[in-house]
Image 1 (tube, rainbow, N blue to C red):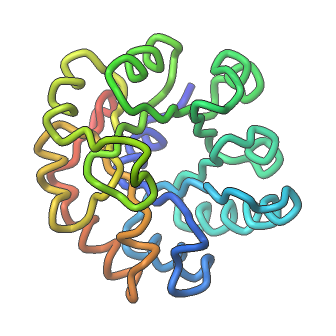
Image 2 (cartoon, one colour):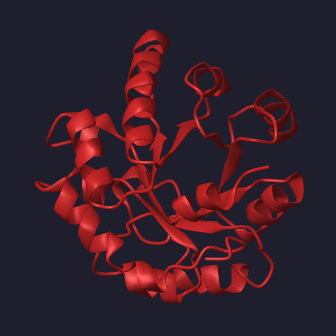
Amino acid sequence: MRDKEQLHNLFFTLITDRNQCKQPLLKTIESALKGGVKTVQLREKGLPTRELYSLACELRKITSDFKANFIVNDRVDIALAVEADGVHLGWQSLPFPVVRGLVGSERLVGVSTHNRQEALQAQSSGADYITFGPVFDTPSKAGLLKPTGVEEIQRLKKEIHIPTVALGGINERNVEEVLDGGADGIAVISSIMQADDPEGAARRLFNKRPKIRLAGSGL
């Protein structure tokens, strides 16, 4: 079964986006890990399979050095090939039962959710955790999804008992509001990827950790 450390490390997740980086991607990620990021989710749309595999190999090594989770978005084959800690699924991914059968019970399987119905379905399917959002306006979802607001997390946590990782427009100015609202952790892209100082940006978010509590982690 997934261990407590894996679940706890979800409290501070960086989702990659090479197109937003001001510095080289690997340097940005390593800096973010130095600043306190505990989970890296590889999400590089449009990257050819061989390049994605090569990048995943590099990130598996870096995250292992920092004792951080490494999760691959959607690509079960890549996750298995590099012995990632888990896979993250979206609405176009393989069905959850198929993925669980492929990766087994030792690896994390997370699901992207955007409303109560999707969250409840993910929980009932056996997801280890969900991401939920976008909480605030975010360029990556502009015109696609309406922000949920922090209040929706508060309502959701009355029914969702697996770790809920909030994402979408989260930065150092609003992160405390999100955590106070009941989120078990945060996932960020632009607030670190676009930073001139990724390590410093990560550290400022990480320093909010006293307010972070991960459901079921016992921590």
